[in-house]
Image 1: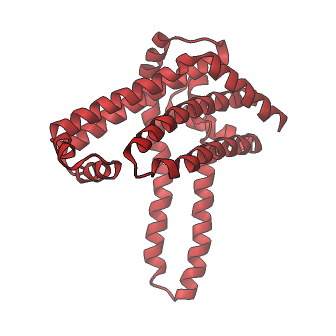
Image 2: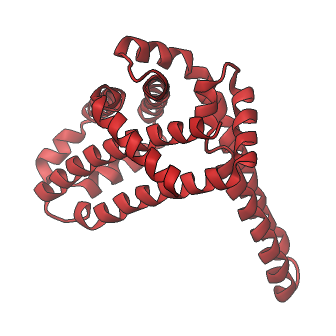
Image 3: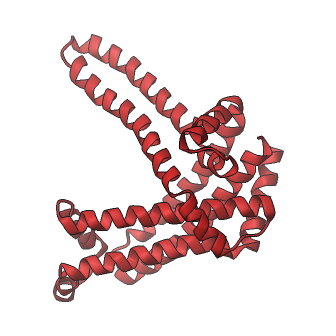
Length: 266
C-alpha cells in the first residue's frame, strides 16, 4: 500500500498548490445554476415559491413534472454540453499538473474543445456496454418467469452473477479510460482499447485505486445525507453549500490521484 499512500499525499499537495484546478468545476456549477434559474423563471416557478414557500422537495417535484416538456429537454442538452466541455477542460488541466506541474485557463479552454467529442463518444460506448447488460437482465426476468419457479430462480441467479461480473469488468477495465485519452494521442476507440488493456494488465493496481476513490466518495455522501435532509431550509442550504465545496475538492483530488496512479504503473 506504500505506493498508494505516496500518490494520495502527492496528489493532495498538487491539488492544494494549484487552486486553478477548481475553476472548471466552479464555472460548470455557476453556468448550470444560471441556466436552471432562467428555466424556472420562464415557467413562473419563482412566483409559486413566493406564494407557497421554497423547499428542496418541492423543487424536485417541479423538475420531475417538466420531464416531458420542450424547455426541459433544451435545458438538458445545454447541461450536457456544459458538463462535457468543462470535463474536457478539467481532464486536460489535470494532465498538465501531473506531467508539467503547471497549467492555465487558456490551455483548459482549449482542452475543453479538444476532448469534447472524444468524451461524448467514450460516454456513449460506456453506457451502451452497461445498458446492454441491464437490458439483458430485464429481458431475462421475463423469459425465466415462464419456467418452473425453482428452475427460474436457479438459472436467474447464475445469470445475475454473470451480468454483475460483466458490469464489474466494464467499470474496472474502463476506470482509467480518460487518463488513457489525455495521455494518449488516439481517438475515443483507441482510448477505450488502451484503458481496457491497462485495466486488464494492471488489475490489482486498478482495483485498489478504484476502491480508494469509491470509498472516499461513499464516505462523503453518507456523511452529507442526514444533514442535507434536515427540514430547516437555512440549515439545508448551508449544508448543500458546504458539501458542494467538499465534493469539488474531493473530485479534483480524486482525478489527480487517478492520473498519478495511471502514470505510476503505465
